[in-house]
Length: 422
RNA sequence: GGAGGGAUGGCAGAGUGGUCGAAUGCGGCGGUCUUGAAAACCGUUGAGGCUUCACGGUCUCCGGGGGUUCGAAUCCCUCUCCCUCCGCCA
Image 1: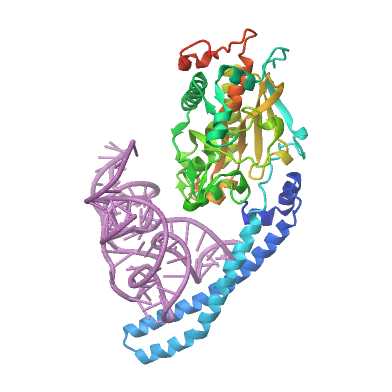
Image 2 (image 1 turned 90 degrees about the vertical axis):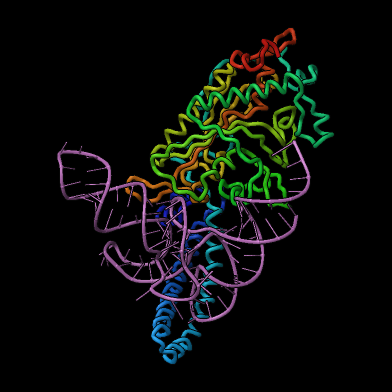
């Protein structure tokens, strides 16, 4: 969420940000300010009353200590009416605060000024392209290759769990393990600390990174225990430092974590869900950064460059998109998407999303640091995929297939695969 | 799953109804001393809100939530987490 003081001082900016992100109800900005004013006036009233009550209670204490019971009794009688009023105001304050926060949660993060204004994916800017997308006639989509070699078993996955939960068999399972190892090793060599995280999180964590209330429907739930199956490692890893105040010399902090990810993906259909394009369970190596506010802009660029380097090492053609305001999401100030080329489908597939959240997540999580002057301030958080596996697997199968029907192992994965062919 | 014991400031650890937001020690920061450092000594040192140009004033927070009371870190209820023992177990 945004800082209410920031909103108060930047009304036009926040509203314009909402409009640019495609949020229609920018009048919530006015509503939240109105609520906030009401809230503050009640706080002032309540504080004054409580101060009075505290003073009397203290006096009573002193009198009791001196054994002046009658005088104390007299004072006790006086406190009665005050009490009722305090209770009333407290209830009012709680309500106002809930209403204010509710509105506050509806206001998205303000896009960075370098982000192109636009409404649909057509307005995203191609920031970079790398490699030459293969276009040969004979190229097959990965689902045909995988079926032929019995590498991925979608049918048994459906039987055992449901659609979108495939089995990976034999060399395909090994290829996934190879990718996970490759990605983790690379991340660690680039200064990220490896973390193994819980696969379920509680409600506070889901709220901390903004899945609740914004994207609640994307997650699988374990109602009996109040847990959510993580849709990305971002959730547990970013919440790792929730409710903490970090020392400035601890920053920046870089983490990487491999986890499975679960997403309900309600409403998806058609070519988007074919093969490995969109699954309910998939594997991903995630990257998370906690940084000083002054550095988050440059940290986003190095995060993007790192993610790009993985695709380059795998020798997979890709392009990087700078997402426009309308296509970037609620919590981000700026976001890049990396899309790998799928020769068998002749289309781009998103394999990484690198985002700067500014202090938006940190404020929800009360994740702060002590700055130069000893004042506590919100840190900035960033994250990116490094990388998501299924579409990489798809792209490898399609890119590294030969006309003879083999699939060659990418050079950097050979040490992990123990063979030249899959 | 059963029985019992806990949760206090960065850490350790007092505090069982009344000037307690909290003793004391350690750590941190500043200073004195020193060529420098250490030791010693002195001072300082939680977070957040409201208000104020500022000085300041004031409120809230002793795991979370609720209650009793004029007054709660202290009493009651409840939840969560941790520890010990038993059971089960990868």
